[in-house]
Image (cartoon, rainbow, N blue to C red; front, side, top):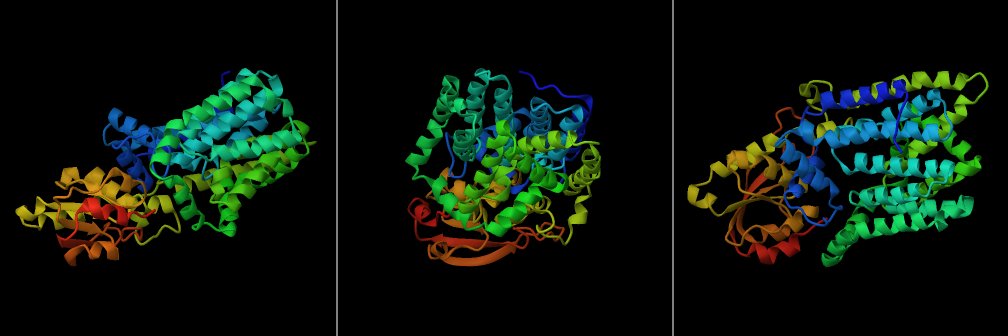
Length: 478
């Protein structure tokens, strides 16, 4: 059940992997990567904002090569390269020629999410890669009717559930699509039911963690729902597809709906878009299903008389590749000076973390020794708390704490701490717990990159009137 590829597909996958490897250690951690690093040092069966896979991966990579950003990002690189290969394999299962396989692979490599997304260790590259593998298994089953493939789809789904829960929506919608459009016998196969049972059992520990902690993942879903709009959803969806991927996706969807054996893929995409628009989803949540539709479209284009549409597609593929390179950190970090996240969110939020720790350390060292012994660092955002955890020890700082999102569950500061250095604007509930609160410093990333923490204030909070163990529950915020 191997995934082989023609040499052009292998060359394309290798080129993407090389680009990601050469840029993997540039700039710095993205904010979520810092959080995964910190969460990896608080391993549990679940977290408030995700299952345990990404923190576990981050911890494993840090054990292999402590402090290496490039090594930490290797799993994301592998997922991106693997996505190219499995997408080409989907086209091959559909009867596509090497040209169709290469066109499908080019759409994946040229996607800002599936290609450039391999630059950052995050839930998205892992989740989308596993979606691609699952759809490959389904398409291969359609051709071979080998039920062992259905068991494998359950095993891969179980792994995906350790990284993100969105694949649940894929199976719910795909199940309805298969029941309506076929192949209906898939849903009755014993190995399919066994695979789904294995997938369900795999997430029992994480579900129990959620139940013990009041289902914070559901609360966070409601928070995320307020951050997205239908218009933004579709802009992000098309932007995730890329220059080549957008027209190929539209054609592939049209062709899938006209092809009996793959009609369920078209209806699954339409259903997922509807579900995520109506709930808490973002446009990139459905990108894991794009390669199957791209494969349908590429195979269809390759069968058009004269095959001219395929050759028209190659300039779009080149433009897509150029855009992927443009969003990777190929330029010197100094070129980010004066920019904000509107141009490139990942790059803008990947600078300034050591400088944030430096600013806090400067304020900490300015305190008298007897005051430092009862001082803790608390931040208003889980990213900045993660930065303190990552860079603070080398600067003599104590542990970082935050009541924000998953970091709140790592626990409060000790009760014998009565002085706090707070990064960000302290909420009123925190201010009321101290006799004196005054600003002592501010964060400066040195490049005037207008990211989340540029110019963030640092406050000294003294003479605490309420113990942290009593206060912590009222500070929690998602």
